[in-house]
Image 1 (cartoon, rainbow, N blue to C red):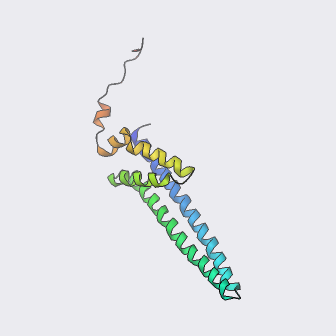
Image 2 (cartoon, rainbow, N blue to C red):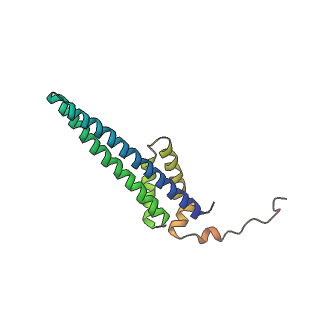
Image 3 (cartoon, one colour):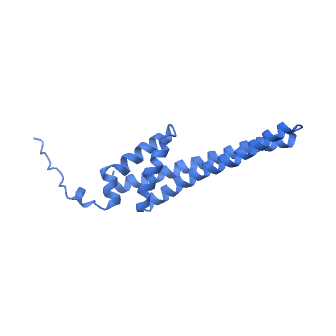
Length: 144
């Protein structure tokens, strides 16, 4: 695979992770928000209303946090796809953060760090691709 293909694949992986986080965040916010609204609507005592309010606040907070991480993943994917230099820096940061999301985030984090911190990724983003292209290919049957 070429460096450009690795970069495109990594951007697709960040888009996929961002989309999955967005879906999970919306789903979680709807579940907690629905539970809180149901508790508020059917509460007969003050404690039940407080619990319903806590669930609604949790829905908003969890939704915003997950939305933030999803937006960061989508922005990193876009920056990598457009081959912007900030994409490499943000890609490294988000790859480290993704390591904690077992199992898919861990795989994305390892692949992202392998590419972005490796020689191929450094040469791709820092413009030192001439050092790779100046190495001549091995001669056919040179092992005999």
